[in-house]
Length: 295
Image (cartoon, rainbow, N blue to C red; front, side, top):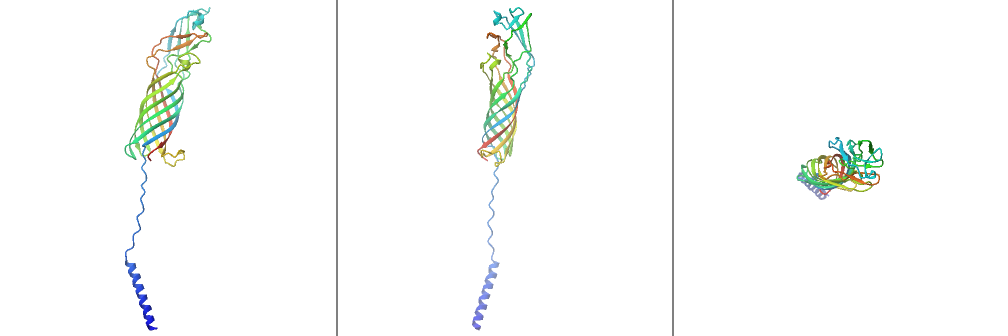
């Protein structure tokens, strides 16, 4: 019995000593947490989107356009007739004072490249196409004079120097800016084109399209929303919002005007009044882009 007690006591002593030694051993350190860096935003990548805004004419064109009109060989082919119905020569003057403003809307596509992610210089190229709805009331004339007569009833008169009812315009522009993380401030400029026509430069109910080319310049500010924005319907790498101002000058060239009047029997009257005015206007618009590519 004594031998059993001695053995138990010895075992207890060994166990106690082992636990004390284990307590003195250095503990194994826990592994450090894995560091997941927050991705740095970059503007590099393709994008596409749409925009809408307001456009208005900018040129100083309030001086009237005055045109002398010769008499036609017959009363039916003459714009002006005397009180007796005989053909006559006269003068027609356009006031050039009607409104040249209205809605502008369309879409754009482009590509940006940012040299240093985060904050840094951004270069890019953008093309856009726009529907416009302004400048459609410039064809009205202020006065027509002829001694002892006037304009034949049913005649149509068009302003050869007025801004046409522009149907659309577009641009292909370079962009240069600086990004402050998700905010981009930029300038832009490049090629512009546009077209409008119809009754202003030719026969009624016909398409006398007046395609024009020129240039555009402006600037804006753009901000990138978080990737999980509720506007990100297409699961793009970012959704960006922008506000932009653009000046557009479409050069009419040195062409003379086309038909500017049609008599009641359909005779087209033409005259040479020289170079038409450029189509100049400014656009202020807001846009939304979906960016695809690097985050």
